[in-house]
Image (cartoon, rainbow, N blue to C red; front, top):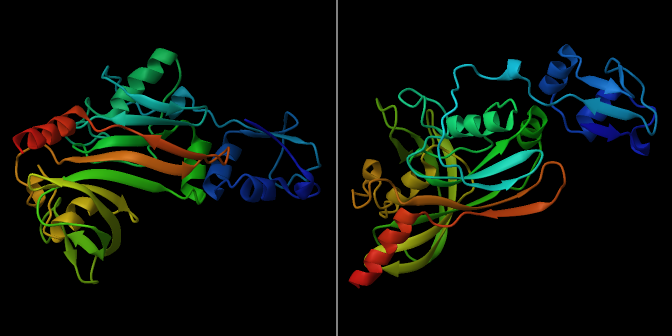
Length: 297
């Protein structure tokens, strides 16, 4: 990747250009230095090099096979790519597919599916998910395609907005906000709950809006302002409106998974500055469930 030095950085150090103009983290700069991955006008220089207007800064940010995780195996699975450019890829992840490898999930994750896809392209692949979803939650996952893209997502204010659709039981109505603290239930490695501020708790903020109600089910649009583990599931349950199928938080077993879908993601592209809005339609199981309720009515 190449960048041409503008007038604001003529006479300034390369280090300043990398960190202030290109918004690179110290750790990424250090990593590229070790690999001789930073050049000016085709020549290797130190970060103390004094730049001139018009100099071309080259960064070797593409992954090599040496960067790849040898424990990640390619597995052929359906992969719904809804957006892709040179820097990022967005996938509409189906339910029942974990995002990352974990105990008991070594060959059935989104990472495995992406590894297969990139192997077909003959391109090294390192899993760098910008966001993640629970295995049983469907919807949009964004993956950074190189180290610099991942770094920009982590370092730059990209004005994220994520909207989920949830099917809920209970009396939730209208719209509102839920603000609380969430932490793990004592002696549980999975379950979270709402607590007063205190030991090991994290502040959580959710906005919600009920879109329609039918047959005792509310179709709710949710925006997690913060990103805590199980946040939407815990917050909606705390309001007496657990997500349908979320047996862990009181939603029963009418569906074999929680009826939760990350359907919209809005953000600023980390390189172009373009405002993007990505959408993924409701998956078939949630569509079918809603149609069956309406037919019963």
